[in-house]
Image: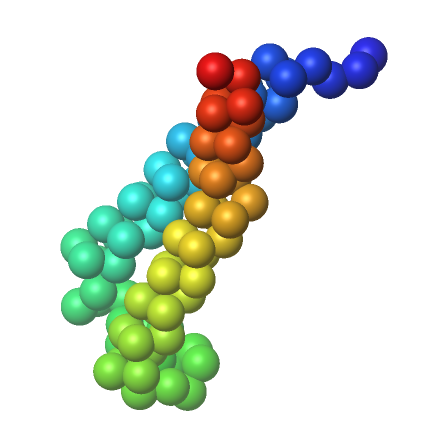
Length: 83
């Protein structure tokens, strides 16, 4: 079965929703459980809790950029092209 533009729109649209939901859940988890989780992660990785917080936020920022590049922008381009 060949994918139509409607299939690609649905794929990119739902992928964007799912990935931004994962990003939001990860950010909320970090904000709510940082005090309990940071020392545990720091012990596992050997990184200081302050460094761990910076690393975690950097990873979330990079994930957000990847979502925009690979899912949200293609969805917007297809939407614009279909209009």
